Length: 196
Ligand code: ITT
Image (cartoon, rainbow, N blue to C red; front, top):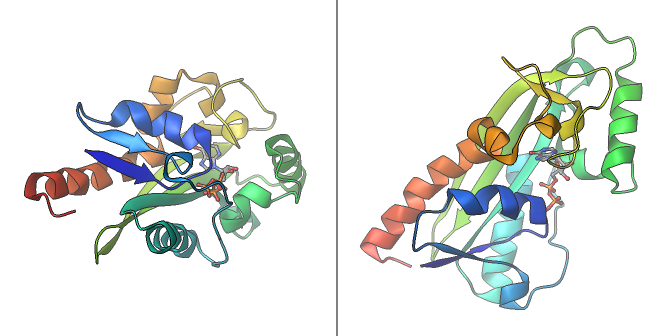
């Protein structure tokens, strides 16, 4: 069965695709003729996730799922949070990291977490699934892998950043994988009952 993953972020797709069971395929936005940026006008990660999924289902007519995610640092009032992608205003991941490290200069409590909320917009149903990965913000960036804030996020219990890990290592413990594991149970139940 084929599912539309409503995202313009290729890293998200790369992280999810290996988690799909045999016989389940992902369609991209391009596959359904959508080349626009999806609206994200909400003030929370959950609201933006919902907005993206509902937008694609209603405008393009496909049952789909979308996700919104972000990095939350409690010691600086939850920044960058819902603004993670556009924190520095340029949309560039390197600029976002520079801004975050500057903002955290002199801050001792470096605890942080990533959160992902998937929204499944089926035929007439809307459901959300959340995953979280705890860790801390490093003093300097390290690693070439991953995307976004991965070079400055060291997950709890590990001595390397997400960007220093192999894709499978990050996949094992990431916020996105945890949220997707719950979504996958639901997708499989839809497939079994052939409801969509
Ligand atoms: P779509 O809305 O099209 O899905 P996007 O990149 O705009 O793609 P978001 O609005 O959800 O996605 O923004 C998520 C931002 O949060 C992303 O650009 C990164 O800056 C950060 N982020 C989320 N998950 C991350 C991860 O696993 N590793 C590093 N940074 C992450």
